[in-house]
Image (cartoon, rainbow over all chains, first blue to last red; front, side):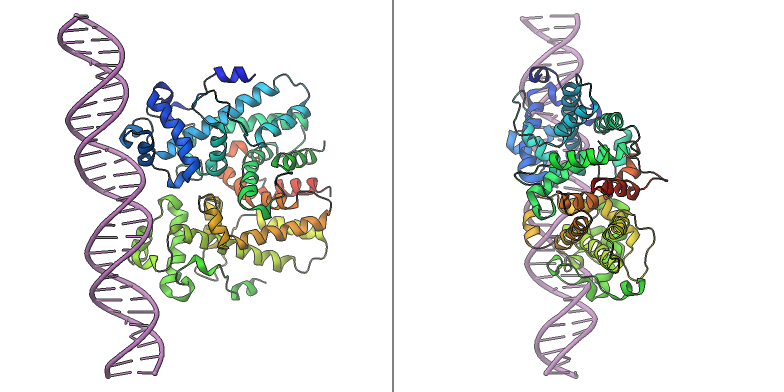
Length: 224
Length: 224
DNA sequence: TATATTTTAATAGTAATACTATTATTTTTG
DNA sequence: CAAAAATAATAGTATTACTATTAAAATATA
């Protein structure tokens, strides 16, 4: 299973880049180091100039791969959600019981990434931190409708729809399966953030995880 | 009740501004027009230069009131949450039944603002849109821990704690009252956003509201 | 293998942004 | 009414986000 993940290449919407960063060593350096740098200094403080200094290339070279830093963020978050989707599909494929399937999905989606798979230039632990801190900035913009039309959020929406389908398998009469699915995905990122920065307004801590909260919430809500 | 709200002045953390915008007519113009302009062009596109052009004052004059646009955003979102807190406290004060109280709270928090109260220079309908689109940007920054230490999020956290208290009144054995409360506040903003921009991953639309979804979710979860 | 073609990267810019120091003006107070 | 204090306007600067042009390297073709 881990082996399988190592060999497949995660693909994102082609319009997110000008030149495929997977196609050259400079491109891979851009991805690898942008993850390290954004995790370190945050998306607002991140600039192509600083990334260029880090990888010893002029910022103009980075502009040959990505139109701007927002497109790069969309690339990184798309990669992350695509990676999560693969895990979800492969790990739940052989499970016939819908409840067990949903239980596993909740673990895959709401647990934080603890170990780097080391199969590429992408550090998944740091990328997970970036998604917690920056994912909502990828769509909370004035350009969201255009970006959506371009298909930049297809993977994210497909993942949520897959979760919705399993929710309906567990309880076909539940009236809000899409809202519950989107709440799980977005809400668990939020609980991870609160755990780290606002511990007084969450019950999540060293012993209680967002997964515990969401498993209770989802199965209570679905009457199972 | 509406009368009461008209007469009280909403106060926010004093360190959010250099000079109190409520203390001068230029200050009030800054607040009034920043709400209109941010709602119109989004927080990323918003600059003090553009606001200055709009109110016919140089940007340097705006810098005498707010250190930067992030502090202004914190001012606006604090104002909004303080306004919501007043509604919550006053409207639920006389209700003894915890379940009815929580039901009303869910309406106050999850319903979108439909009418401008007209009692001030602040347009609450537009401010509600700003909160839906920009609230998470107020804390998803590298400076969040410093800002938190400065007390900039006290009102927001106090509001969530009030909701938590009522959740515990409804079901004293529920193990995740803080996480549920923060999920309601943040999650309902998210559902409003999805309704507008990503309708395929929410069940909310013209007939189903985020309030319907959250009432079902909360009362199922709390076993009542 | 030599040359043409294409790809890729570096240089050198510009307009806009985010902010600050200084000066001018207005308002308040004794 | 003059002095002091508060407020606003002018004129800057460093950084950011990006682009046009040129140079160098890699690849394809004769």
